[in-house]
Image (cartoon, rainbow over all chains, first blue to last red; front, side):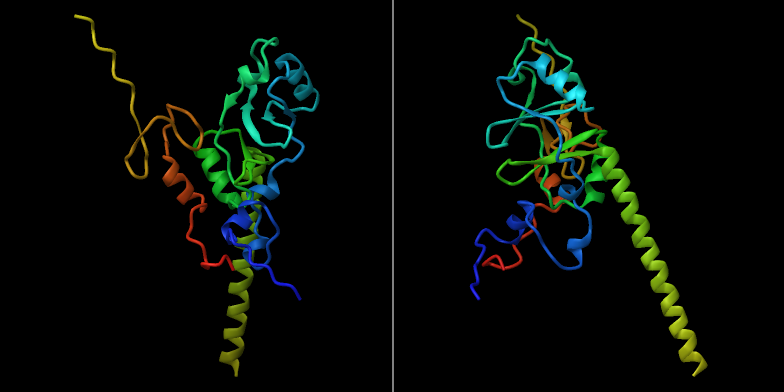
Length: 170
Length: 56
């Protein structure tokens, strides 16, 4: 068996959205929930064309990337509504805040609600686009996770109570 | 004598009190829950120390 040492470390592995295992790996993370089908465009694309393409796909967001899918900028509804003859480079918000795929979904949901942010690009440490996380998706997944954990705790309590009762009966 | 320009509205990180130009989470300059980059990466668990020196 060949063994490799991933020198950059576990955090870097997770930040790249690479597979992991164990109990915590089963919890949903930003990269799992992010939508991978978000429209993208190049710096030189005409805004009018980009807007039309995004609208047809049902999106109000478009990520500006290079040929290697490295994120350069973001256009939300406000930027997409600009002069159609501008280029994406002129219209975009350059260097938007991006988040890594391994961030727990409930943390992203809480921050997105607190900061009233409708969407957030998810990228690897190198800036490679993974997808766009929508607040509604993050909130829904966080809620689902919360309910599942609550249910698990309830089952655990019931199990402990029944075991205690049996021990007492003995 | 020319009037001095009005001081820019300062934004302060809610966690550490550092003065910042914009919120690192939402990029806004008027964020009510502004966070500096350092506090944000800690909050989102992106800057935890490596578990093993050799990345095990």
